[in-house]
Image (tube, rainbow, N blue to C red; front, side):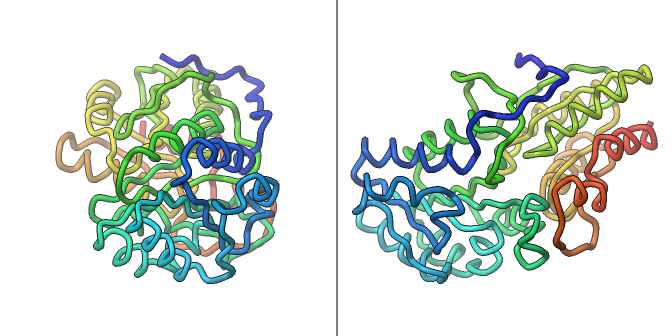
Length: 318
């Protein structure tokens, strides 16, 4: 059982983008088949700082994301292991057909990092603010879909998927995440992490909303409501067993995601509950809205992604 982070909710010392670049460098040095692909965002994800060390294992494909996935498919067919990075909306919305056909349908091997997830795109604005990427990739047969919540998890999953064939999509922020896990923690595909035990309600969250949910649990505790908090980093496959277990235990579920409430975590949890354990439920997330320019704190308030919004949903449900 992971201990709940301190009430200070301290940030990781290393940014998520630095974690990606450092881990890619380590893997590339260990395995000559590991190839990094970029769509003119090397400075955004800090791979520009490692290219001199692996000049033949890091390729800037330019602002041509669909072509980049085609290159990744081709590399895969030659036995290479392509790690593809771009902002989430370009990896999914813009290049969905290549991801579906050249990737999944052709049974090629791609590891895709979609960064700047949801409101963390900040000043890049509405066109760059993806609230639908998880839903799109969940539709692809046999794709594995993650949303990481801290640097320890990102590092572990990047290494884990190197040895697993197929389409793997990891959704992440680029900057500092709240530190949730210690080094050495194991993250199993299809298994959620129970971070806090409670008997009154279960909050299932992913990505940046895990820390927001823990803060919401603190607010609820002050009102005498004890909440379970689960980090559901594995969106597909999802942990059906833990969802059903805590639905039966607490009789109420709230999901929290930095994503559209349609197609992402909330939908995935609702699908499980509707078939296996019908339970009163509310979904915290983006509702029929596009992105916009703004700082993360403002955007969380605007889209109602704050701890007080999660706590209010719990109170309404109960």
